[in-house]
Image (tube, rainbow, N blue to C red; front, side):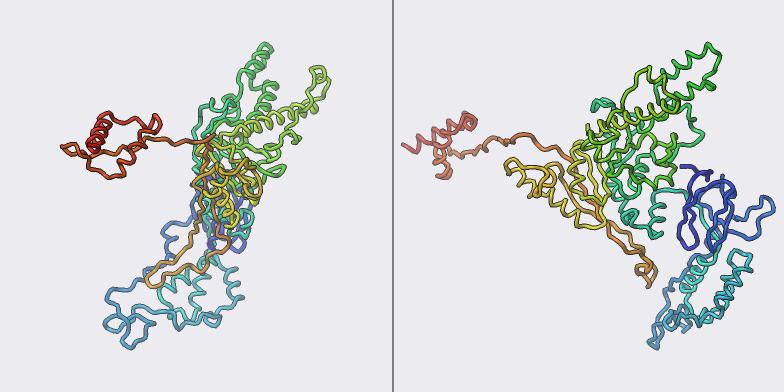
Amino acid sequence: MDELIRSGSYVALQLPSELLKVVEIQPNITISLGKFGAFQTNNLIGRPFHVTYEIVDKPSRDGGSNLRPVPAAELHELGIGDTTTPDEAVIGNDGVDFEVVDTEGKVVMRTNQFINEDGANQILTLEDIEALKKADNSAGKDVIAKILESHTSLDKKTAFSLAKYTLRKSRKYMKRFTVLPIDVPVIVKWVMDGKDAPRIMEMREETLSLVTSWSNVHWGGAHGNESCNGLGQTDHNRWLVVDEISGLLVAAMAEQMGILHSRPRDSMSLSEDVLRNVAATEINGISESHEESGRTKESDPIRIQQARIHRQELFMSGTTNTITLVHQNAQPNLSLLTYFGYNTSDPDMNHPLYTNLKEISFLQLLHPEEDYGYLEPAESTPEQLKEMKSRQKSAYYRKRRRWQRTKAIVEETRAGGFAGLAVASAMTPASILHTLVPLLRGGAQIVVYSPTVEPLTEIVDCYSKARRSAFALAENPVVPCEEYPVDPRLLIGVSLHTARSRPWQVLPGRTHPKMSGRGGSEGYVFVGTKVYPAEGTIEARGFRKRRKLDVSTNGTQHGSPALQSELPHTESQSEVDMEVDKEVVSLIDNAQSTVGD
């Protein structure tokens, strides 16, 4: 993630009302914040994040900027002051508990019991306030001062109530904003506050954190052991995702894996990235063939064309630390990834998701022969290629490369060996798990999110111990069927979880949940662990516990008669059961002879 605001990137502007506005920073563009004012994007390019600016009407003389950085001391002036009650304060002797007095009868704290907040307490009308806003040159400070001065019941408010009232007016009239970098929590808050919660299935930040934690997604390293499944793919750094929340789940997992944000522009050029990640021998061979003509590598048009070809070959070519997105449409909906610098329609080659994010549809996974993109296009002969025009030849090679890429992703995904599965979809969870769980390695974590609990309780029942026992006793069970929509032997330790953070106001005598909390779905998460079912039958065999006999010195046995009745039965056991100590056998024989005498 960049430390400075760069041109072409997205940023979040936190307004005084605590709402977020996501904008794209392009040079020479004016950004309007409604009633808070407007400013030029050139005033933000190259500046750091997490700085609060104030929009002033008169630009500064040096650079013509109408943004003034607000110092930290000035920001904390609007904080709520200390309203704690002294230890010696007591309630009035007259029994009235709406004011707190000290031992001398002096009022040290009042309550709002007799304050009636209505329009009659404010002398200024809406027309007067609008006129003050138009004539104000102090970024809203004079307007707030006039409103406080014109309030008739201001002297009756408590210190805490007065601070809250001042803060509320400051958030409404102060022309300030804070620049924040784009990350997953910011995107979640922006979507939820923007009344677009169904777009992400009402997944809140704490629920998304629960999904990423239980899925155990993490950075797997830049290199891995590529001899695990014979396809050059590692087993421990590849993840399956079903994302129908506009790419939010992919973004959260990519952030945990360290592949969400673009590489720094000055760290590696495009040509260096190509040379380090593609077959450099082919490029060198082409360039060497043209060295005799005096053309350099930088000006060689064939080399440039070759670089473009390899740029397309790098697309979805990651071998480790990858995310495989399984979707049900022709193209997945990953619109939220645009705010992280990755546009699926025109992806940036310097972005890690260019190589580490792979896409495959359920049709390609289940029935690849029915998908048009999996079918091999007709191959042209060298004579036919010579007769083609440049556009036709480019289209021919583009189709061939797309087919090779699709075929490689399908074969890699069907080979399995993934480290985990995360699902956030409106599809039936049983159908998804029946298809994707067999592709996971042993010990992989499966996490499924649903805004309601009913679909997940059905999955818990499908993987319950009772259903697993019935499946083991059934004769030739068929999966999937109405009774067994999934194989109950493949998951253990299934459970349901939920998490919701509710903000509270914690103050002496005034602790309660905040009344501005948002409702909506609770959100539930299903968790399970992939295991391999045992093949064949299982036999448990052990040794019988040997019982010691207490024999007295005169050769008489001190034991129960039941033991003596078991002795003939012991002699008729199998050979494994007859492996007893020779000394014990001799003692038993002596005891029987003594009893017979």
